Length: 338
Image 1: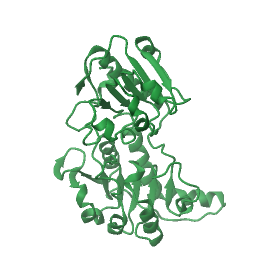
Image 2 (image 1 turned 30 degrees about the vertical axis):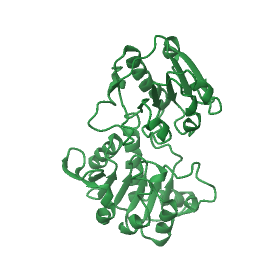
Image 3 (image 1 turned 90 degrees about the vertical axis):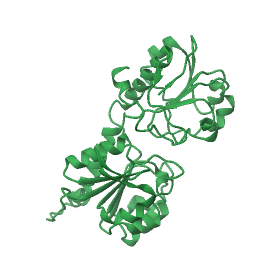
Image 4 (image 1 turned 30 degrees about the horizontal axis):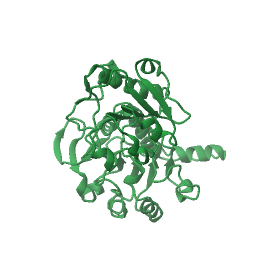
């Protein structure tokens, strides 16, 4: 947690483009609010006390940082903070908070959905249906299958609980190896990923993007997996060396992949991933449920009220680690307005 004292009438910059966040009336009553797109960000930051990065995919903050002459607090409307975690912010006194807790269950549902889609061969069923072909097949069970969730934060834990409820055996991978974890049981060390990847039928990437996790899934990682394994990425596109994944799929080193995030977004039209068999693609939407934009504003508004009151902020990111440490408070407070 972190305490930041807001001025009597704070100035808030909101990076949003033409798509302004909903339900901002109460915040507008308590602050001078400057809505801006990427081009106007530097001007909006000059004299601003806080920045709400509602457009969480924007990479404009580093380029406008020189104008942040009195900024105290930056909040990003996502769980991942890599678009704003650059050296200037990391080395400053500006407190960084995120929207941890909003997308956990929605992403867990997505992961269970793609696991079932692979096991029950839904994609091929749809192809045969459209072709008017009646072709009986046998499919797989997921009960008893081994899943590894790489990333042991709140989203990874929600995924573990969802997969375990469906009968799967779930382990985790994180910075430190341990046993007796309430959601994963066993947590392996991510640095030794290739040593234990051969044990798993499904590998789910949901780790935050850091210097240690960038390119974590490369040729060596895919070569270590079972030929029958499926890979799911709902974390960050840069966790994966895309060319190595494509090569592994073509060579049959793994049986399939479900990808919601990519190194380049939108996925280029010329990417072979579009037409590869046993590949499921979605456009960075695994956590986006009906009403998610309002929920993101609720999270920010809860922290905004705490800021005005001089209370500790929720979801404070450790700027050295790149995420909210599990032992710190945060995530639940926004739901109750605390």
